[in-house]
Structures are given as C-alpha cells and as structure tokens.
View 1 (cartoon, one colour):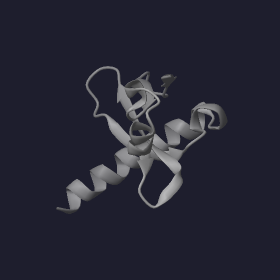
View 2: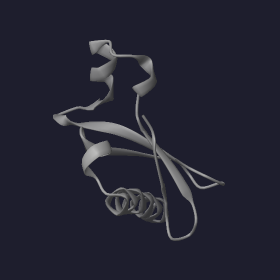
View 3: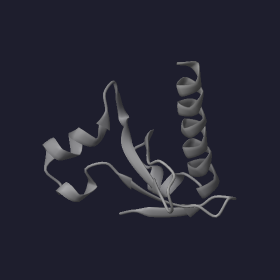
Length: 89
C-alpha cells in the first residue's frame, strides 16, 4: 500500500515499502527489512516533478503510526544529508 504526502513546496511524495508488490513470500518480506534492525523496513519515496527519489529506513508500522509531517521530515532530512555529502566530496 502506498501513501502520498505533500510538502510545503507542493511536491507530492508517493511512499511505498520496498518490495511491497512482490507478495507475501517470507523471503520477499525479509528483503524489505533493514539489516540489523528487524523492526525497520526500507521505504522508497518518489516525488512528483523532477526531484530525486529517496530510500528511507522506517519502523515496520510506519504506514499506520507515522504522521504525514514525520514522514516529510524523514524525507527532507535524508535529502539534506545527501546534499551535504555531495558538497563535501
């Protein structure tokens, strides 16, 4: 199941758990889990219009428990982190 949130700049982010479309096979479910953090999964957020997709590590129940604002904070934080690491290189 995907979730869509819109930031203050009007960018709509569509977020979905990685490998979500592959079914309920235990191997595929495990593929989405974050190594070393059994309670976290990889989530891919894809923006409308030109910005870069991001891959987040979020709690397994992110779809139900994370607010839209918290999800947007996670996206923005990762984007800033990536921009910072590129400018340091």
